[in-house]
Amino acid sequence: MPRTLLKCHQSICRDGARVTLIDPEDRKKRASDMRAAAVAWTLPFSLVVPMVVCGGLGYLLDRWLHTKLLFMFILGFIGLGIGLREAIKTAGMLDKK
Image (cartoon, rainbow, N blue to C red):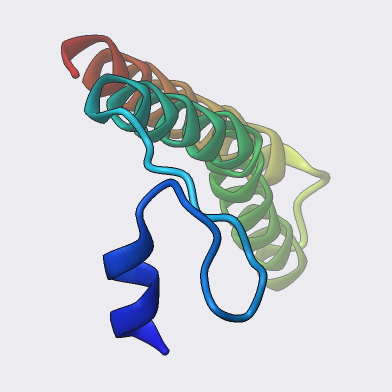
């Protein structure tokens, strides 16, 4: 079946399916759009996950040392900084491409 798809280009194939070729420029634009969509979906996770992990470690440290949310806030802000740095780095990589 793949041979028939390659041979028929823009005509109707034996099984009745119409095959159209994609312009190389259109293919590059679609790839660029898909890359941008992938980055857009990963940015919220790269912001939230470090903050939750660091805040969770801070919470466990607070329970162990019997302090009142001190380390949770400190490590949560550190996690926020890590997440922002990753988001800026990812956005910068998208601009380069």
